[in-house]
Length: 286
Image 1 (tube, helix red, strand yellow):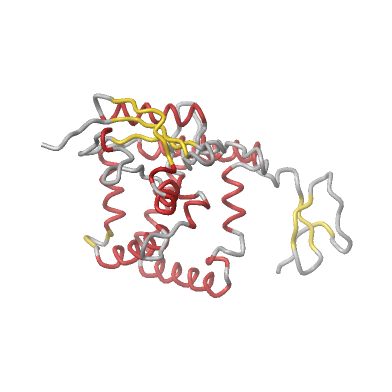
Image 2: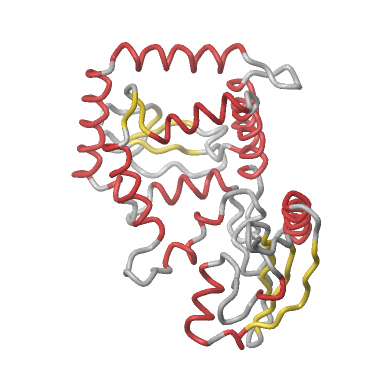
């Protein structure tokens, strides 16, 4: 029978003093083998990349705490990460607070595995292949898994929505933007493939083909979603649309601004901003 000892740990990089905290609770979890040549060396791509380049001597184990159950080890990890705000803490290599946002960290994006591909590239390839091959009753494995999750936990959507809203509303001290705004800026960036005209056209055409081919299913899905957005209320008596409206009033950087155009370009101008020469109120059909 394999050894199963759930545990929480903190390690520190010798050269920089930066920390990484996590927990191990799957089958075979054994603190005695943690950070050893043939043992577990965290799930962090950043940490493992440093170990690959400089060896295990790059880190020292600062703390190990053993638990009776996997749940208690995970909960302790989550509380600790939230307490130190590891995702935004420059003293930590953690790119998350157990909130599922590690993959959005640019440092993680750049690290390639032995095959030369990052996790995003491999995930995109595998996801596209799986969606095309594994179709049952008109649904791919991702859709079936999500339906199963919803069946087992009907509150999943509201829980995820609340957690995401809480995370997205946090302000980055360096930029003054919340995660929602930063995400929007990245999507509009030059490095976003979907922003390239040729790709944007393909995406648009693909969406139109899908809607045309699955018009009945698509309309049913949209009607169901709209009904949920308009009717289902949270513990504060607000619908999703009302929550979004309130959030936008407080956080939308365009609040209070008005449209101006020069006949070729539309821009938003706030009351305290100077109107560029050649621009006048309203939007142009460009």
